[in-house]
Each structure stands twice: as C-alpha cells, then as structure tokens.
Amino acid sequence: MIKKLIAITFFWMSVSSLAIAQGGLKTPAPSPFQKITQAFGLGEIQIEYSRPSVKGRVIFGDLVPYGKIWRTGANASTKFTFSDDVIIAGKEVKAGTYAVYTIPGQSEWEVMLYNDLTLGGNTSDYNTANEVVRFKLKSAPMSEKVETFTIAVNNLSSSSCTVDLNWDKTRISIPVQVNIDGRIMKQIDEVMGETKKPYYQAANYYYENNKDMDKAAEWCAKAVESSPKLFWVSHLMAKIEMKRKNYESAVKYAEMSKSLATEQKSDDYVKMNDKLITEARAAMSGKK
Image (cartoon, rainbow, N blue to C red; front, side, top):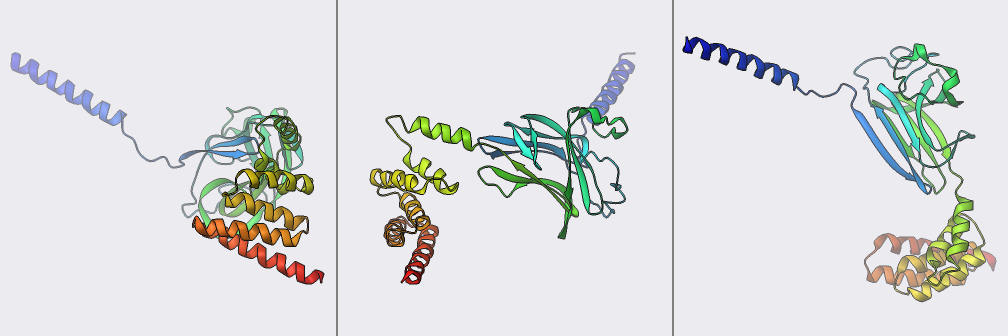
C-alpha cells in the first residue's frame, strides 16, 4: 500500500513538473519588441514597436496590402511618445503618446497618429474620430533590402529630425520639428544676467542657428580668455570669425586650436583646423 502511494505521489509530481516546465517554455518572439529613446531638442522621442521580418515574403502590396490600414509593425500598436509639442509634416502635435497607423501605397503613404493605444491590429474597428493628425508622404525605394522592420530617428539637428520607417526595400521618412528657439533664447537672456555666464554654450547656439555673429564673437572671445587650453573653444571662435569674414582672425584662432589639439592628440580637430585655415587663406586671396 505504501509503495503504491509512493508511486502515485511520484507520478503526480512528475506530471506537475512537466506541466510547469512546459508552462515556462520561452522561445524567441517572431516579431521582437523594441523600445528606443532619442534625445531631441530639449526633450526626447520614444518609440515602442514590434519588428516583423520579411522571411522570403512579398511585403508591400501583398502581406501589407496597398490602400488598407496597417498597424505599422506587429503585435500591439506601434507608439510614438513626444515629450514636447512638435510639428510633424507641417502639422502641430501636442506632447503625448500616440499609436501610429499607416495606409501604404505604391508611391505615397498616409500616416495617422491615433489616440486609442489599445486598438493594435484590430483595424476593422479603426475610428477616424480618434485621429490626432493625418498626412501624406512619398515613399522612397531603397537599393538594399532591410530584412527586419526598423524604425529609426535620423537626420538630427537641434530642432529637426526624421523618423524613418524601413522595411524590405521601402522607406518612409516622417519629418519632425520642435520649436525651441524662443525657449533657448529666453534661457540665454536669463543666464547671461547671472554671475557665472555660459559663454561657450551661448556662442555656440548663436553660431549654429545663425544669430547675431558679433554677439557670438564677443561671448566666444570671453570663453577663450577663461579657458585658453580648450581647443574646441578656440575652434568655435575660428568658425565664428569665418562667418564674420574676418579671415585673418579665423586663421589665428584656428592655428591656436590646432596647436592645442596637436598637444592633446585630437586628430579630428587638427584636421578640422587645417581645413578651416585653408578655406580662410583662400578667401583672403580672393579678396585681394
């Protein structure tokens, strides 16, 4: 009797162990999830999506039909989160999280940002009342095939970028802008009234955004004076002087930067200064 009880107990323990083992089985997801965060402007863009692969199939016009709403990925809704208000394809979009749906076409796509984050692939229940914005973009053929659906933030500047959808041999580039100039200019006005002034950062913003170059030169000169060993500061001064067409001064600061960069073994800055010196001297010769 005892042996029989032991045997029955062992049997059920084995069955339970097998069930647990099977229940805990983990295999690779067919369309793996990805979450990326990209610093942008004064905030960030976050993208969450699942990534299907081609796997020998015909994608656009077949697996993803033309003229029909696509969840733009796999599994749950693809989501874009903007920490700040942005302008997408010329349309204003408030900060927040949005599901992304598209209607692929042979040469043009429609892109929609959607308020309902739970719709997923149930596109038959898609409701235009939940749309935040809709716009059209031309698709671009790619020479090289992208096997796995990829969303990437590219072409970054201080206030613009593209969010690129790449799959198979097709790319859609969504232009995104953020209006931060007013906020930064206000910050500059405020911090320049403080005791410790960020001369280099303010001068660099003025240079990169084609503001008042005389003011940029004034601030950068003070930055060079306070940090004479920082080769990137004197290089910025050389670039500002080039924009001001003060070519002799540009050469002077570029040579200063090159010397410091050589000492500190920064080959990139040595090359950049050599290039600037060549351009400045050519400009000086052209003026004579």
